Length: 266
Image 1 (tube, rainbow, N blue to C red):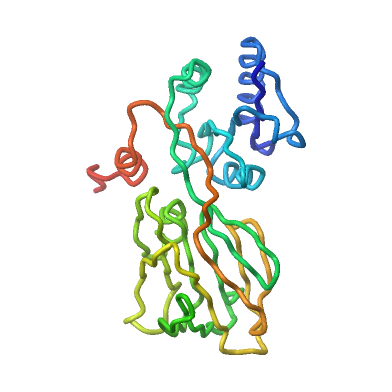
Image 2: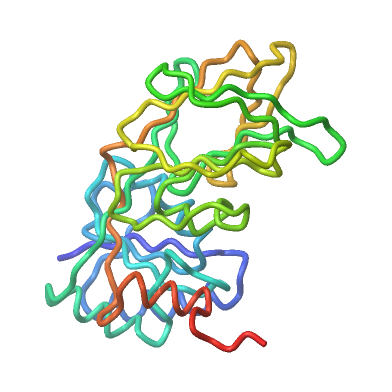
């Protein structure tokens, strides 16, 4: 008997309604529904909601190789690619072994001795509208790269390159590349531009104002206060999330659909 963990956005009535439909459907196929405390026993995971729901669920799966079927009930859905009307056909194909998946790598963040992971991005920011800009030195493998004076810095994975980083003017990175994008937020100098770094590099930041606390946000969901005395290191992890891919859809078609490429916008 196969086992499944279903994660859904319990704040959205539509997600609750669809969860109940999925639960009945999978149980009719002889699938055991697991509680989240038994995620390690799951043969696959179903996520119902938007990208935020999937990012939250991804933290349960770090270090596992459990395939994830992510169904979009949110607004944009770069990660939750499977549409509601495709869900049950996708379940049948998956259970028959007729599927492919794509691995999305995590970013590993070391804050002093603590280790956390991000699927999308890490944002180091000033933490308020009326707070003065931050001043940071950027290093790659301990080699000085640049000094940034800005409202903050976004370090994104390829997966996160279509999230906050994109809205701040950052580049889109193909999901299979081992890379990170460094994107300044409202930089004080016009020469400060986004840069793509080798994901194997160790990225570190030096806060120049040692007496000041900055905000470090992980995937827009977890917040830390960082001072000039803290050591923060970022690198791409070998760990990843296995996303089941919808049939007859590729990354370019997702970009065209979500970003309206080729559409007449005016």
